[in-house]
Length: 142
Image (cartoon, rainbow, N blue to C red; front, side, top):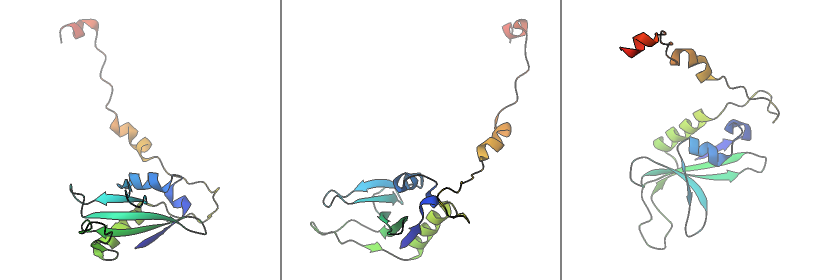
């Protein structure tokens, strides 16, 4: 399944950095040298979501996503059991799409991307109230 991505949807970071934040690990195929990303579904290596990043001619990227069920069964073969469409692949594509920033009405690259600082708004409720001051005498016997 291909997901079309614009540069501004990544929030100013590279696709590799954005995918790491989304839970994917960087992989390099030892035989072909092709670079990709994978997200495990369990402690084992398989099944896993496998994703290739492809540049688009008009700018931006395609994320080519599929679900690998198992490793290639025969030595020297690259074919394996995988789903390129289906319910789980569609759910993962929807999860990735929900993590992307929405496209601004002004799609120029100079348009500012305003992100409200959620932690700053929660900061007063996260810090405990200051303890009452005690004299040196009270501190000595407590």
